Amino acid sequence: MSATVFSAGFQQLGDTFYSEVAASPLPEPQLAAWNAELAASLALPAEPDEALLATLAGNQPPVGAQSIATVYSGHQFGVWAGQLGDGRALLLGELQGQEIQLKGAGLTPYSRMGDGRAVLRSSIREYLCSEAMHGLGIPTTRALALVASPEPVWRETRETAAVVTRVAPSFLRFGHFEHFFYGGNEAALRQLADYAVQRYFPDCLTAANPYQAMLEQVIARTAELIADWQAVGFCHGVMNSDNMSLLGLTLDYGPYGFLDGFDGGHICNHSDHAGRYAYGEQPEIGLWNLHCLAQALLPLLDREAAIAGLKRYQPLFEEALGERFAAKLGLRARQESDWPLLSRLFELMQASRTDWTIFWRRISHFDSSPGALNEPIRDLFLDRTAFDGWAWDYKARLAQEGSTDAERHTEMRQVNPKYVLRNHLAETAIRAAQAGDYSEIARLQALLTRPFDEQPENEHYAALPPDWANDLSVSCSS
Ligand code: AMP
Ligand code: MG
Image (cartoon, rainbow, N blue to C red):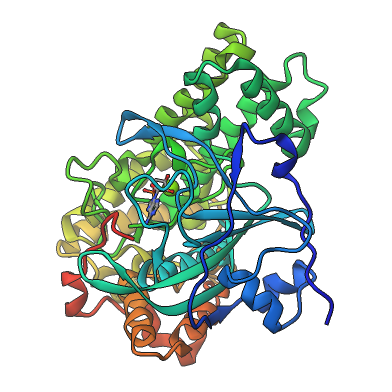
């Protein structure tokens, strides 16, 4: 078996942008999960050999490139936080044009108060959700491998260490640009922006101002991404500017959560006391972060053009959101009057705390024939009469565009997933893994690769959360 050879990408920028760091050895590494499909796309074997496993554990340096920790800064919870950086992540290099990063590989010059490690619990959450989002068709960083170890790591209690191998075309964050702007290093800012445009936004090169064109693409991608999150009921939990991907990918899975019972003000992160990153705030926060990025790029931009670009965010987001929800309702043509229909639905769902995923899946089987009660959907609401009123109008709207049930049902099942990674599902895999059994991780990974398929043998994974799930709390501790 020949060694896996990484190529240097980001490393070519020079050491203003990173520190060369060797991973800290991880004792007794065990492969807890492996993504064979992603491995194949990276020209890696169907199972990692000993040498590759040692590299992914951090026990053997990558061949072909130097492992690095990149430096960035950022705004955390609305406040300028100064220098942050890869405090526990190492970029090994690239395979097939994709950056390969180890998360939890030990101390770096940017670890600040941290230990450079990630615990098994949060690593399983990151591994599974990356692949769940990919299965849902939502842009995200990917997860290739999960390596566990008995090495103790202290959080609120004693836990154990793990390393996730993450994969993305680029792990560039808004915060990378903020770092050089606030550090007053315009040459480095320009160098980084040139790298980003050339590698990731090449169609911007011919624009009058390529940096402005790139900013506009990031604005559009962010609007699309957050519309995706809102539609599927995903809450990121820590939308700090250092967790925002330049490529519009879902990045840094921490205290995220999928909505169970609908609450527009749902806060998934127990450390987020003010609800800055609540479900309903995400679209606005997306724009707030884009302002941070635009501010950082300002030395390369025309101020008025940058402002005009940012003003495009709201209409782009609304367009993207309208598209997603029309599809979720099985409507082909869109009308202004669909917004009131939707907001009435949200009011009813809010009042009943109707389960988000179950509702959308059930309405994907809405019976529009005269007299049909649609009891499985109706039963999700406390005020059944109010639901009947809404259903009447929905039915009229469907009739207006000549919608046929069978055809619409098929289409709606492609956009309203049956399976999402609810906290309690991840928790079950975590508890088993902490006891040495990794099989639930693989089962969930397989399940969530096909979230729109019925999978009758997996019906129980689509059920309401059990009572014990009410006591689960996720915080920034990872
Ligand atoms: P996060 O809240 O996970 O996005 O992390 C914010 C910053 O803290 C980033 O610079 C991380 O690299 C750093 N960080 C988080 N946890 C640790 C840790 N256990 N050790 C070192 N740095 C960490
Ligand atoms: Mg982060």
